[in-house]
Structure formats: structure tokens, C-alpha cells
Length: 69
Image (cartoon, rainbow, N blue to C red; front, side, top):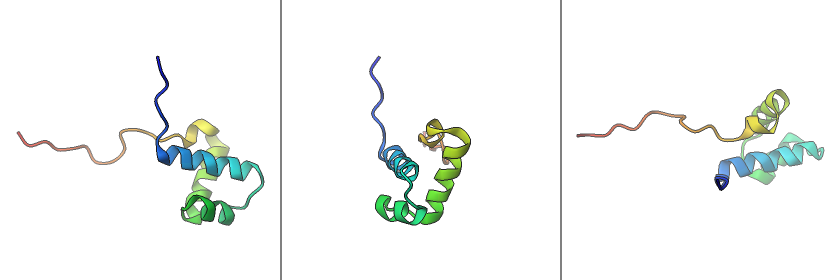
């Protein structure tokens, strides 16, 4: 079975993880990736607690779609 292509959000998180592991600071990572510094701190916490897999996008978040009959 072929691997599912990575979505852009996951690519962004993994890029940030590589930069953090390379010793870059959260402010520098946030600027390079295009997110808020607080977001980088959240990703860093997830990375520290759950590793790379914790940064992958979780499907099914948000409000369920409503279909009219």
C-alpha cells in the first residue's frame, strides 16, 4: 500500500522540529516557518512529550459536517 502524502501543516511542523533540533530558537523558527512563536512552543512541547509522531496532523478535528437531506 502506498504512503499517504503529507499535508502542508505536517510538513511545516516537521520543518520546525528539524530547526529546533538543530539548535534554532523558537522566535527564529516561528519567523522561518510562518507561525506565531507560541505555536512553536506548543510544537516543541508535543515533540518533547511524544516525539515526531505527536507532530503529525490528527484527522477528524473540528466540527462535524452537517448535510441537509
